[in-house]
Length: 372
Image (cartoon, rainbow, N blue to C red; front, side, top):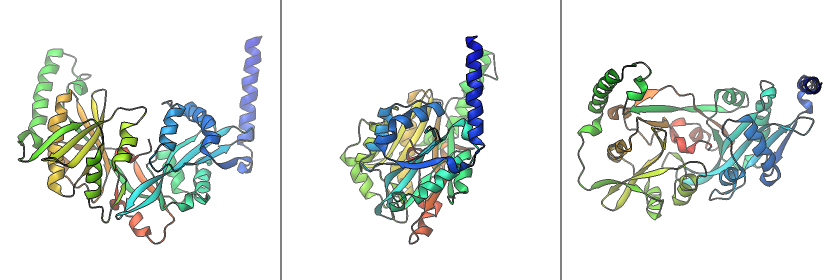
């Protein structure tokens, strides 16, 4: 009897939801909310719609602990029962635009509950966001959306200006071919041969140390990272700020991941770094910065690849956009381009700098710039 009752209750709830979804969308309520007003409900909503669960400490770090202390713009959509069925956030972030610091919004935490997808909720939120007064104070907004969000953004006057490219360098193929070759002894022999071939096809194998240069790990971001950031020529480029305070917030203080730092030095001067993390046996390069010049890019990768190969990893993954700052031919180091679905989309309200902001190669975007 109880089973029948609860079954009737579920059918009734489903009927009410379907009835509500067939009603005109005019009864859906969109709001711009303050962080402290909505964070508990938003945390619960996001955790119910995503595989990776986050607690309030994560959102406090992400939204409120950035060095500039600028609060996020949070848009929610509620049904007529006051339940959140969709949300997104726009987080102001400091960027250098042609050597001038300004604010650009990073769009993230885009979610619509399963029952309400394909009903135009995302598109309505994107349009509502662009009308928010707080959003109009930002120079531009950018996002690296998934395919579903990209379609809705395109219908809401957001433009695709560039794409993110994924490069993979194999170090050890044994695990990759283990599902194909069942014989252990044959697997070992083939893996040894292929691994030697991979080693022979990458330029760092043949490079010796360069006089005056050295590579080493760092335990923290200190003042020398400020000196490096201030020394990089940013003319004609758009960079997310990468000074000591921002790097410490983004990587050292991240509540869910452990990042590591590799430095290239010329004598005692820091002239480049790579921030990375290791997941299982894969190394992900999250951020790269160096003094201008192809030779320093080259040395940075030579020293890093020699260093990281001692970490017992099977592959190195680098994801970044096409840009005019990083121009190293990665094929020399054995990186192969792989399919990747991240695009960079922007909305621009600044008519004066619109051409510069819509030039995708002017933006320097790494995996670390993506909404976290």
